[in-house]
Amino acid sequence: DARVTQTPRHKVTEMGQEVTMRCQPILGHNTVFWYRQTMMQGLELLAYFRNRAPLDDSGMPKDRFSAEMPDATLATLKIQPSEPRDSAVYFCASGLVTYPGDMLFGPGTRLTVL
Amino acid sequence: GIQVEQSPPDLILQEGANSTLRCNFSDSVNNLQWFHQNPWGQLINLFYIPSGTKQNGRLSATTVATERYSLLYISSSQTTDSGVYFCGVKAAGNKLTFGGGTRVLVKP
Image 1 (spheres, one colour):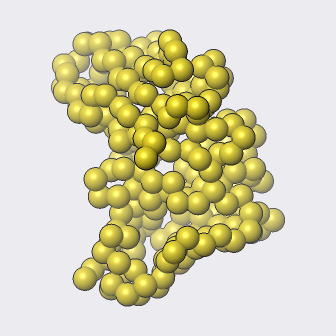
Image 2: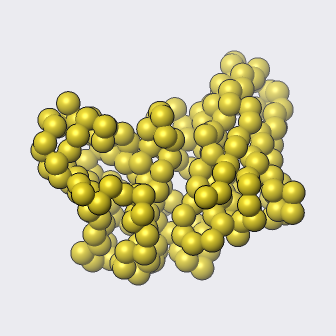
């Protein structure tokens, strides 16, 4: 059963610290998404990659967030410096351009910034 | 950008009951998906349904793209159906925009 994996599953950090979240997409998928879920804003798209190239990061605060795909098996989302308002669950999803119905979400990283 | 509204926001069902969840969207879409977020937070892809009708077990979905809405039907509900159901739509570009969700509680 192919799954999207994310690490860490939980992260508690102090304001100002750097946070790195990692995602391993499903082998063979050519699209990767980062979503953030909060009670107030719901599910918001932060970044979108196709064939490892960033195509859309308009939902991401550029001054502190960065997203990369150093290779096809790893996507990273970094926050530096972190702030309490960044507390949320961060989901990674992967899929196929040719069939969006194959989009699968990872279990998420629950981030708490104190 | 495109607006997505889901109704009702909350739904309490007795086990065995049937229900209908609705997703309205403000513009033409080329992608519509239904997801279930279980009580542990996992998002599960239920249907990819930009138009037409699909069924998967006790769940089925219908999208009437020309009238800009989609319906998710839950028949013979079970406690495992509890959670939040999200509708996500994509117009132009890459962004899947989600509605606010319908929180479902199925009581035994």
